[in-house]
Length: 202
Image (cartoon, rainbow, N blue to C red; front, side, top):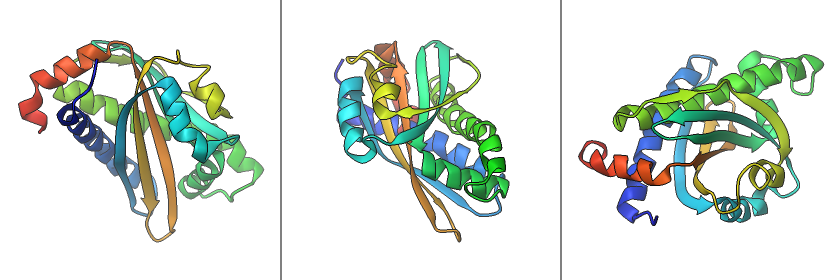
C-alpha cells in the first residue's frame, strides 16, 4: 500500500502529538526542560530503513527499548539511540556520574522507563485519535548493532514507520537523536483508520 503525502503528514502530526505528551512527562523527571520533536517521518521497508540509518550508526552499539502491541493494529515499537547518548541521558535523569558502576546498574531500568513513556505517548496518540484499542507488553531493553536490531528482528520487506526525533535538554546542552521504529503488521488498517478520522487530525 502506497502512502500519500497527505497521509504521511497526518502520521507525522499524530506522532508529534504523542511525543509532545511524552516530553511533558519527561520534563517532570528532570530538573531541566526537555524538548522533543519529530523532524522526519517515513514509511519504509526494514531493509530500506537499515540503509537509511546505517551511515550514521554503522558498527555502533545501540541501546533499544522495545514494546509489542496487539489489538486493532499489531506489531512492535522500538526506541533506539546510541549507547553514549543513552548513558548521558540516564546520568542527567538519575544524578549518577557518567561511566560509574552505579550508572550501569540503573541504566536498564531508567531507559526502559524512558522508552515506555515515549512509545506509550506515541501509540496512545494513535489509538486515541483513531479510536482504536491497543494492548502493550512490558518494555524489553537490549543493546546490539543496528543490523541485528533491524534486519534480524524484522522481515526485510516489513513495513516500518520510521520517525527520527531530536531531543534537547536545555541548559545542559545535551542534544541527541531518538529513532522510533514501528512495525505495523496491519499497516493498511492503520492508514484506513487514519483516513476515516482525517478531518480530526489535520
